[in-house]
Image (tube, rainbow, N blue to C red; front, side):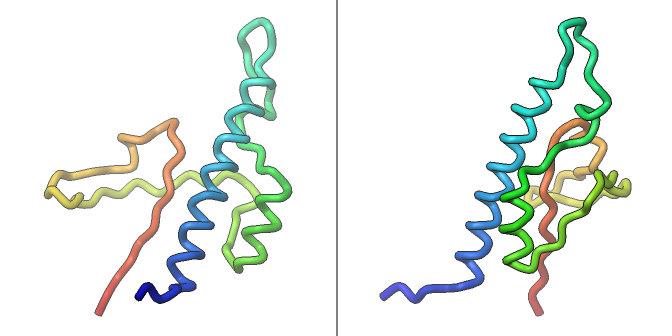
Length: 101
């Protein structure tokens, strides 16, 4: 019989909220591009839906108020290949570090 796991449910909810917020940010950024093809200053930083902020706060998940550039680092993926943050420049990434002991 399946046992409800609160932690797993929160992680799924978090993933859905993040996906929706990134989709909303992308659509908003596309609207802010002027007809000349140059972006407005607001398009340079992602806009977060206020409802997403409320949901993250309700789950006690920290959210930066301004865009923060990730520090440069590299690590090995599950297949042993080296991966670094620079490979994903210009893309939205979600980092989730787990440990078991």
